Amino acid sequence: MKEITVFSPATVANVSCAFDVLGFAVAQAGDRMTFRKTTQKGVGIVMKNFRELPVDPERNVAGVVALAMLQKINPDFGVSIEMEKGVLPGSGMGSSGASAGGTAFGLNQLLGEPFEKTELVKFAMLGEALASGVAHADNVAPNLYGGFTLVRSTRPLDVIVLPVPALLSVSLLHPLIEVKTKNARNILKKSVLLKDAVTQWGNVAGLVASLFSNDFDLMARSMQDGIVEPVRSLLIPMFYALKQAALDAGAIGCSISGSGPAVFALSADMDTAEKVTEAMQKVYAATEIPFETFTSHIGKQGCRILNDNKI
Image (cartoon, rainbow, N blue to C red; front, side):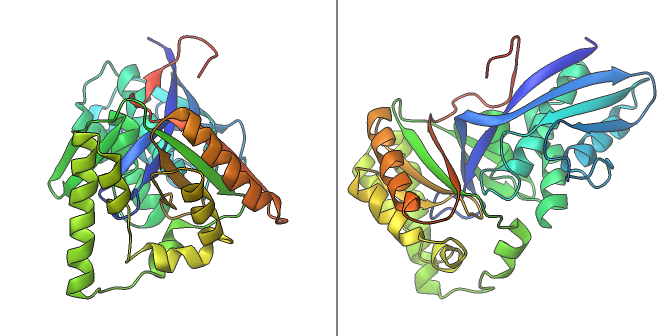
């Protein structure tokens, strides 16, 4: 194999109450990445769009992942990575996670699959560390495994794949403003009250239980974040209007996707999700803020090989 093209899905991290531990893949949004062997050793980066992103591999999210993998294997070739970003940087939809996870997956294929999936997550976390200053896995784990994943621990890494209710769908509205993950982390409180932590733990447990039981009422009760959302929502214009519109349209729950500014809502089926997306669009259509929306099934498959031009 001299060349391979992969689709690397967008992801929603945190999923309301589960900061840094829970995430899921989005089926209909993501990056397209092509990996080619080169006779010259090392890593080359080609950006098909978003050319303001650095192409120096030591400063590029995909580059640092590829460099680490090549250093581990030391093959007799280098690699060129051509990236077409479908997940906008700073969107809160796992842009750096898509670059990092897609690189770990694609390069592993090019190398003959020497690494297990857990090892790929560890490599991808190096990209997240470059992007945000923290080697978190709640984006790259669902990006690589697909579906919902729970990161029980990063030291040592322990990723649990959770069930996905069959018809569960997501609506996403991304205001076209940038919220850098580092900045969104810096504004968070360094400590929380024990009573607030206990409430949050109960909600995380309830949310996980709802995935196993297909209990959307329990999911709705559990998607309550009293720690991160109240702070980060200040960075997102019209956040609470969006949230109320989504709930009024039938969403199970609504919160901030990753560090924002994207806002996501979960619905019991695609028909409801489309209505929720429309309701969220109406909120932003009344403003002067540009935005984009996505309506998608949960991506039950993570990164995958593309055999044609379709996503």
